[in-house]
Image 1 (cartoon, helix red, strand yellow):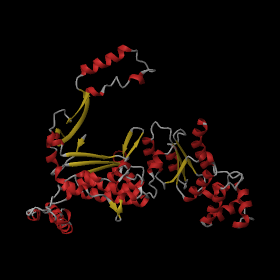
Image 2 (tube, one colour; image 1 turned 135 degrees about the horizontal axis):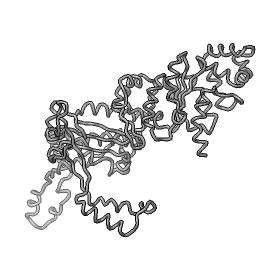
Image 3 (cartoon, one colour; image 1 turned 180 degrees about the vertical axis):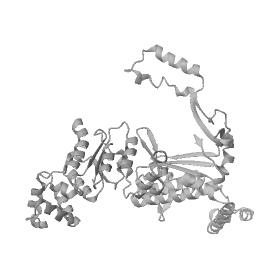
Length: 486
């Protein structure tokens, strides 16, 4: 792992330098998991293979014995193989919060008590501890007033011994200040003056994450770098609580400069459009860093694009990208009318399809995922040729409109002109119009006309209606895999 340090940070990594490259000192460490003694490994493996013949059929039965991890050991060294001291390594801290956090909120005894106590201990100053001790003394004085020892041990009044009363007059209650750990351990998390266990799983996870993240860091002066990984911070959170978590993580990292935060998520709420260089896409065991794969103009394009649903784009088995709202209404309505097309995602991306296709091809290399592109011609022949280069009809299918807008594409396909005229002639005033006139009237009409037609298409009321060829080609391309599997 290479380490980049600047300014005062170089003090902490001075013992991790291993070479000078282009006038810059290089810092780094490596983790090794290797046999402690190769002879032991050879002996164990030899015994396994001598007892039975190893082949593809029985390999799974003995594969764990072929890798006896109990004979392995780990070590952390500088990248050139030299040793690094524990005192240096302890300045670098790593904590992980897994997605399975429900155990922390099952019972009152597990409601993050340990982490809350640790957090309170780390954050309490000497003055705070002194105040707690004084308040405990006040509590004791009140207890002493209402718990007179003479009311508890009162047999001296009836004793025949003359010194009994004098003896018991010296018995009293003394404070027994418990350790600070014991006092803090009596504290539990709550919400709105109620037990946290009374809240829903979403609220419990949100509050617990706040406490866990703060408690795991320790004091800032104790470490040079604290790496914190969080798996699915959105788990069990509604959209409002998800936004609270996003805001908290941003404020938290801005305030704690020694913290480097990594989180894996399925929610685009955690992706900052203005800082996409921090995004790494993971797929099929490979990682693609936007900082390495994209240029500045690509970041600007994605930041300006109104749709940033990258998860659907990169990970959907079948996805259609288009430009205009009219295409979205039409395609979604058609897909809704066909049960066999329900696994197709539909996303709007305004222009810039080449950049998206380049990223998509890298992320989906070797997968069975497919991408369909539906773009407008816009009287740009060169742009059409450039996009057609991506059209391999195996992974990507690109189709461009023949006309300038969608309406003439629909009207001039199959019997759509007759179907639309018969269905909506009285409604939209199309009875006495030619196909060209109907097209112009539709183009100049309000969006409600397209909405009405698409709504009827989705409900199956436009029998015989055909999709424009460029759209149907893409849908057929995406449907091929389903038909082959069936």
